[in-house]
Image (cartoon, rainbow, N blue to C red):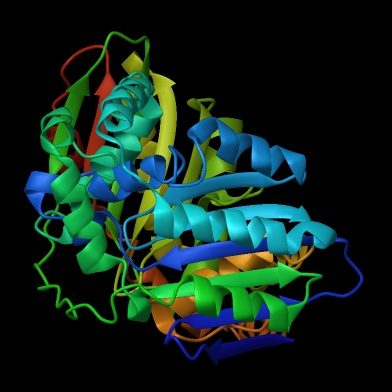
Length: 417
C-alpha cells in the first residue's frame, strides 16, 4: 500500500512497504527542471544535479562514492523538463545509511568553485556527445519545435554560453528559489523502517526554504515548424511531431494505447509498414511524451539519405490509413495487454515503483495505484481511441526535423504529403 504523508517540517513523503524484498529505493524529488530556468541560467538544474555529487562539508566527492559503495548503494540522479531526482537503491539493512548520504548531499553540498569549473568541462563533453548522436539531435530538435515559445522547449543541458556564465552565486540563488519544501517529495519503496526514515528526513530537511512562487505558463498557440540539420553522417534521422495530451488528461490511456498501435512494438503499424513491408528503415517507432500540462506525439525513423521522401511518404500513408482504416478491436485488445504488461513488469522493480510514486506526487500530489491503472486501460473503447486519433492523424499538423549529411527541403516534402 502506498502512503502519502506530510512531515511536520512541511515536506511530503510517499512510502510503499514491500516486505518480501530485501532492497529499498530512496529518492528526493524536486519540482524544478529546465522549464523553470531563465535563459541566462539555462542548464542550471542539470548543473546542480551534477554538483550535488562533488563534495559536502563532511565528504569529498570520492568519499560520497566510497560511502555509497560500502553499502552496496546504486546512486544516481537525473534532470528533466519539470523535475529533478536524487536517488539510491541499496540493501534494506542499509536504508538509514543511504538516507543519511542523500540528506548530506542535498543539504550540505559545498559547490566548490574549483569543482564547478571541472564539472562544467564534464557537461561540455556531455553536450558534445549529444551533438555527435544524430538521433538525439533529432529528438531534441523536434521537442524544441513542437513547444516553440513554451518553457518545455528549453534544453536540459543548456548551452555552452549559458553554462560558462553560471556563477556559484547564481547556482545558490536558484537553489534558494526552487528547492523549497512545497516543491520537494521524498519517495521510498521497498523493505524499510518507515517511521525511522520519516524521522530522518523530517529532521534532515527541516531548514530548507518554505515556499516558492507558483509559476503560470502562458499557452502559446502551436503551429508546425520545420528544420534541416546537417551533420557529417551517412544515415538520415527523421522526427515528425505534433501536440498530444498531458499525463493527467482523461485521454492519457487512450493516447498511450494508440501510440502502442502506431509505433510502440514490433507488430505496430509503422514498424510493419515502414520496415517490414517497404524496407525503408532499420529503426522506426513512435512515442507519446507527456508532461503535467501538455505533451506531444513523435514518430522517428532512421533511413538512407536518398529515402527520406519515401519514408515520410510511408509515415503519411499510415496516418491517413488510421483515419480511413481505423483500429480494429483485435488491435485494441492486443495493445491493452502490452500496456498492462509493461505496467505490471515495472512493478517488479523497487526503483521503478519509487520513480512512479515520486514523480506523480511531486507533479500532481497523488498516486495512481496499479489496480486503478489496469482498470482504466481495460475500460478504453474504440470511440476513446478515435478521439485520441483525431489529434495525430492529420500530417499537416506535424512539425518535422531531418538530421542528415546535406540540406533537405523538409518543409516542401511535408507539404507534398
